[in-house]
Length: 277
Image (cartoon, rainbow, N blue to C red; front, side):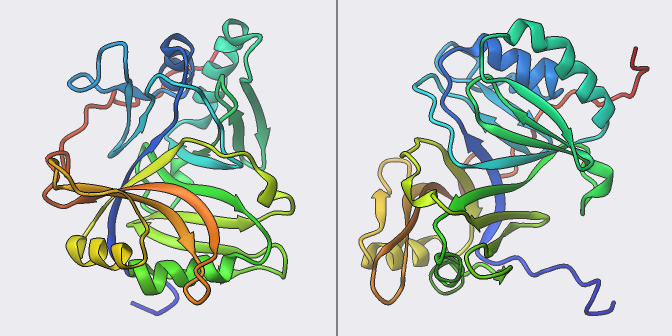
């Protein structure tokens, strides 16, 4: 295998599992995530009125009830039939009138917003590495200019994830390997330093669990320590390793490979193509 075609190594993050968005009503969430995007509500966990888990292949959206606060950036999802999804999103549009819902075809993708304004870009799964019928291959965060290099260094040296930086000055992007065919992208954007706080998070499974817990603890970066559930902890602050200055804040739910949900089979509707009217 040539160097050009060799896939990137996976570091500390073994699998990026879910994105958490707070929403204030599960009825429009059902329309958008299930009827529109074609994903599946998890039938075994969180089936009450407090939370809603949505299966996307081997990954999930978690949609607990709460105050929505979309972050600057977007979540990328892959689907097996982009035309079908476009048709279904257009079909539910009248029922989402008066919300922040939007859907625009753009450069071979669908640039959408859910009913609360969370940006979700829909891709054709056949055109992405891995070719998984449904997945969440990327989350992009808009960060202040001049922070991409420091963010990449934080992930490389503290977390242990492969990280690369590309682009021109003031608009650079740090690409972080978050698992096979998965990445977090931190894209510099003017004005990102003035973005309001948000309450969303991402969840990953990792190796070097206790080693990383101690390393982040030494920098006072643990926001939710290991407690009764010893299989996970949380941190949020990505900092400059020299000055300690905050570069960006995004909550990470850090799960051990001993977490009971690791490699748990997820039920997904079988995507069967059928004619679009």
